[in-house]
Amino acid sequence: MLRCYRFSLMCLALTNDVTQPDPMVVTHSGRSVSLTCFCPSEMIMNVLWLKQTFGQKPLLMASSYHYSQESSYFNKFIKDFNKTKRLSVKRAEDSFNLTISKTEPGDSATYYCAALIVNEIRIAEGTVLYVKVVFDYESKRIFALQPVSESVQPGESVTLNCTINTGTCEREHSVYWFRHDSGESHPGIIYTNGDRSGQCMKSPESGSPTQSCVYNLPKRNLSLSDTGTYSCAVASCGEILFGNGTKLNVGGNQINPLLIVISFLTTAVILSVIINVIFCMRMKRSQCEHCAGTVDYILYENEEVTM
Image (cartoon, rainbow, N blue to C red; front, side, top):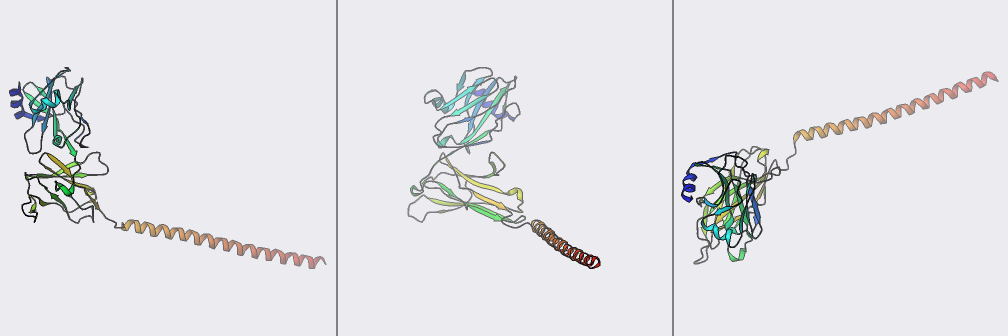
């Protein structure tokens, strides 16, 4: 059975028969998360969960026959399913959900839900799980720093940077860039450096394995749609850490010329109305005074004629 799965992995195909609604889930170490998978097709024979750690091959975690409540577990995940109970799956009529309790840094990976139909595995687009870890700067563990914000005008270019301290971790690391717009529910991966390729410099301390690496993300000919928060993330030694994020504001504090014209015209119209009202009131008052004088003169003439 396991050989069949390994062979089928060579024939993966994205499909709408199996869907994962959450492209990315971010949590803190120690919390629990549930990854959702919908598989309503009646042609499905088995449903599977696979885990792909960054830079490694996907591993089969669990499988279940369609319309069956029983599941089978594989590879190194058997212990967490059967003994520690840190992993669990729940089978329903049209879903196969994976729950991870007390998340650890090593849980950071891409999780794929797939369906076995004859000799083909139809796989969903996957859910990227990131487990955030609180790091101690003084212990020289891995961490990432980014500028807080950048303001540019449309059409200009900017280079975002991420400084990574690899700490005492000597293994290769990968860097990913994410963009999160205020109108989006989930950030999306926009670029990955893959294996380490930034400019790195070792610590001047004698015998220290600590080194600092700078990664750049050039953005050219920016438009208003590029506005958002850009975060870098580094994966190494079984851990992944997000940078604090750089808020890119395209347009900055520049005042729109159209708004200036509209404001000027609005002010001019208001002043014109006020001046006209004052002028009309004065004209009306002057006419009333003239009418009153005319009436007094007529009355005076009438009195003289009567006498």
